[in-house]
Length: 600
Image 1 (tube, rainbow, N blue to C red):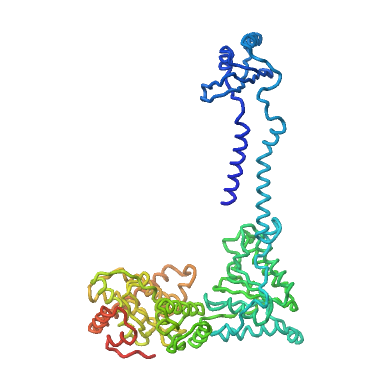
Image 2 (image 1 turned 60 degrees about the vertical axis):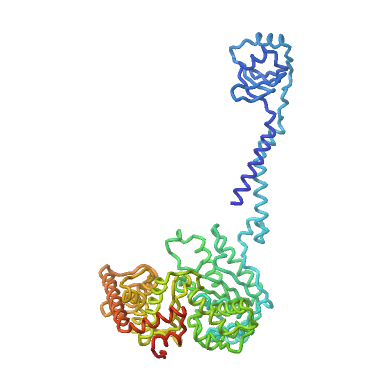
């Protein structure tokens, strides 16, 4: 866009210059007009070359063809016109006939300048763009395109992260301590003929601390750290990415021992041979090929370690994961309750905490949260405390921050009383079925305060982290998710659009039970519906999967309706408590239902 605007400006300048030179150009008139002006005695002087005549008028005249006033003119004499007659007319009217053009044209020099001006301006523009691009990319001219943006290491003393800043993932840290030890004392390993892994792939969900781990390794080993995102290597011009990879590895070898960290490596490391490549020569594949070549070129004595990070290790090219490239794959999983408590201790180092804050309790109530989520939780709690004018962050601030992150920010809207009561029955249906289902997660909070896109929320979380789910638990999840719709049918005899997200969750769980986890006797232990891509099965098999999904959901819905009818008094009691308080915590919710707190 900027280039197009600059080019337009160049043409505008050229147009203005041309207009300036052409402003005094003679007007082209017809021979009839010329003779008219001669007969009227208005021609001052003329200059003839062959049958072309240029001249100057005594008084300005107007060209009837375009209504333009002119004093200088040019015309052509027809072949059949009499030269002698024209000469006598000019002499008789006192017209001065001269040998030099009265317009004194531009001459050879200015004609040459004007003809070359557009080319000169475009050449100047191109030189300016190249110099500017070179200064921005740190290179010279077109060669700067190939320079790696990541070829500047973070100095060892500036990597202010070590293993003390990494908490909650001790098993992963133990895998990387060996790398640090090698970088500190490589001779100890070389004496025994041991070779360090050339590459380590950190695989795990977003926010689990993969980048932090890589920086901690560099900080502990006290070596230069090159950090780059895989997307930085990709450019429109084929070959630029490969050039940047070569530059990056060359710079890392110069300061070895060192660490190269490539984040989101799946951006260039996807399996080759897909439809997106044209003969294997597109930019992404060339960049991947260069990485493979560079990692193959390592010798055991170089001391350059490549650490990659990805959220999707399953899509990576097998050549990238073979021994000799990324020798090790380290899975970085979300932390457990103990790990979350350790992470909270790290992130609350500089946060003044009230005496009532229990990080262990907070860790238990935040299952599934990653290190990034917990850092955000601490920050949100600190912001709330500052907003409330407190000197320290209390447990109430953490609870409100956790509620905001888990349930969404509250919206200030006024609902009609009937809509509010229907929302209360919807959420009470979810909560009551969660309380009644054996093995279901305890209900932590019920609210009819609109949050995000929902008019109300019910939060259920386990007391301990869970890693496997059986048939009864998943069936109970479906029954609980259908509780809102079932409550509306039991009380009002209608179904509203408020169950949309519930039905999406129900469909996902039921289809997983039947098509992925082998929990249907009719389908058997088969994976019909993969987590990614299209299902690979016969139409009859897919129809059978749909039938089984419908059967499970129908049975769960019937059970949800039956349980709510049998416990209608408890349902009404929860609704009344919700209408009075709007939000019920765990203790108040179970008390309103008249049920004991569920223990796992």
